[in-house]
Length: 109
Image 1 (cartoon, rainbow, N blue to C red):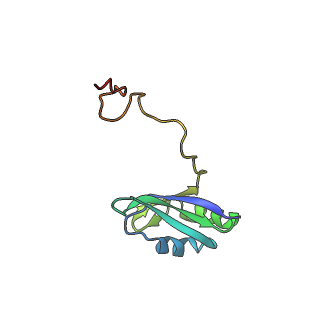
Image 2: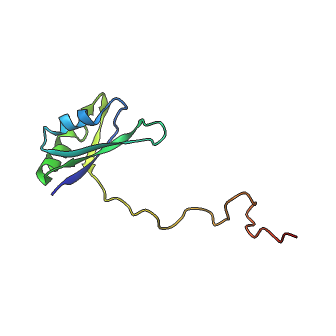
Image 3: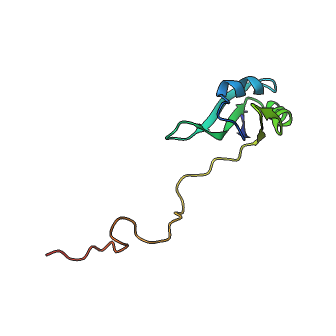
């Protein structure tokens, strides 16, 4: 069963290939994903590595958590499950749009 790991504090120079090459020392790597900004396409400084085995994941955490990669001390730990999209909204309860909060609009003659 594949095990997903969070990798944080990455520099913008680190590529998915660099991460894959490093983590291959701990075990078989299934996938590597660096999270990027939608607009600039630059790294957000973290990503995920999916290891093929639990043992490989454990070894990767031991080997790389607190280690250096491209000059930064990186964080490696077990990824938390992805949250469901949707759910509660965080707005203040006011109506949106450009009507100043009065969405009724009034009557037109």
